View 1: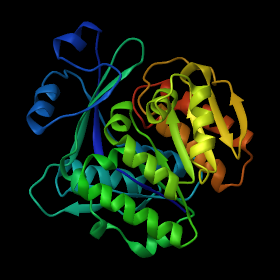
View 2: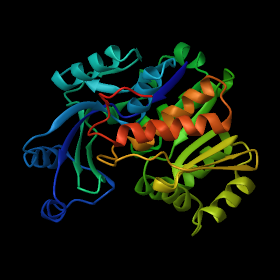
View 3: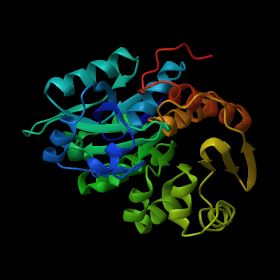
View 4: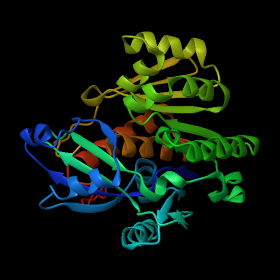
Length: 318
């Protein structure tokens, strides 16, 4: 089983014109952490939002299960309307639900996502109950059974969830499992570069990122230099999986470089592209696919989700 750990939240998606970005003082194509008041303000500026269960790791777990893989999700929600909708969505998708309820008076996390005509998504995240995930919320016996533990870099934004990340990765590796991290966002990497570097050196086997996140981590100005840096400084990493947007993806495995073109798709909404890419690749790892098979499956998964709004595609995946 692949266990995914991350911030549990509900996505609220709204298509907008570019001028709204400036009007609402949004940071285009990035993820910004916001408070409850800002979240409510942005929701008030969404005339026709679409609500779906979301969160990066939850999206990845969802798509693994839809592909026919075995996956579970761990996160934290409030015992409110959105929290129960989230848990129902997890169960309905065939995932093993290891999500826990927050006992304090916190709302379930919500991400206000604005989609511009170019398909870019601008995310504004109120973590809510999700930021209180702690190692006490983790089921050690379940983690010990994981083949791969996949965790969001976003978890490092709060001390308790960072501790949960470190505890889970230690339990998993001690039990013979593999640890994977998604670097999540450039701002996330900038905030935690030093500790990410130490973590990856010590106990990470698979790293998922895009080229901007990779270059931010290594402080290099090109992906080629970053790849070389990775090989020289992170010997424990078995595979570096780096997406390049419309240029496809590159995988570095034991010093060998594999390049893949992106699958053609009409870009409607880029929300979840990286999450679905990771899901396709992780599914390939679970099924013992080759690097080529896994990467092609990942590219097709990303192309599938960006061709419609939201992270729960209605079209059949081929």
